[in-house]
Image 1 (cartoon, one colour):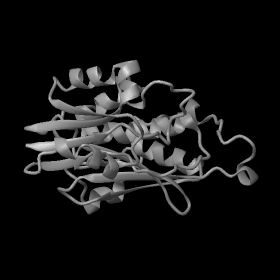
Image 2 (cartoon, rainbow, N blue to C red):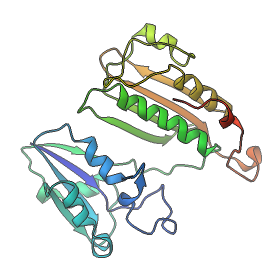
Image 3 (spheres, helix red, strand yellow):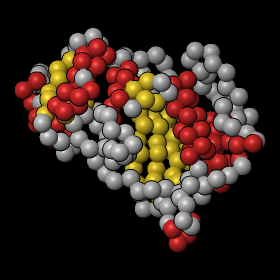
Image 4 (cartoon, rainbow, N blue to C red):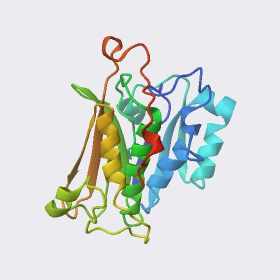
Length: 253
């Protein structure tokens, strides 16, 4: 049996409270709420118990507790707090009485770091990220997991997508980001692969002043990452959003 602790009681660094006044786990991405996507990420694990640490106000006003119970078929414990938590360690302490010490514990949490504003085109960035996530799912066997991580480094903000797929050989890695490249791994459900998606993604990221790369070992999955520059008004002007005409030509697929 596995405990899966998911902290949902803290502030979000990514979503403005005025624009998103409802609980952040209920924000939709591709017609699914974020918490639904998180729960589905663990669908391949058997013998699991979810432990959610939530804000009591979200339960009182938006019935978050009822939604979590419904999404997990009542296979969960819900810890309601009157105040905000300060990260995963704090949440684990608040939920300690619900955690079976004889079970493995997984804590699914976003890093408690501030992400600076970046200079980018949201259309291009969304398309690149969609391509990387689609590839991670397309080349991973059923029941495997995909991780999305965003963090700042010395020169910009990095976004990485890591999977538990077959990984890439040195020969395949040498062909990455080339138009029409046909790699050894094949989509697990027979999906179409044109060999152009990563090449176009590389072109777009480089036009935005960024870089894109892959880290992989054969049999150990792959991690695709890209870095985009932090917005600087003295360098980029008053508007951090790039408006471009790239989208009249190719799009990652």
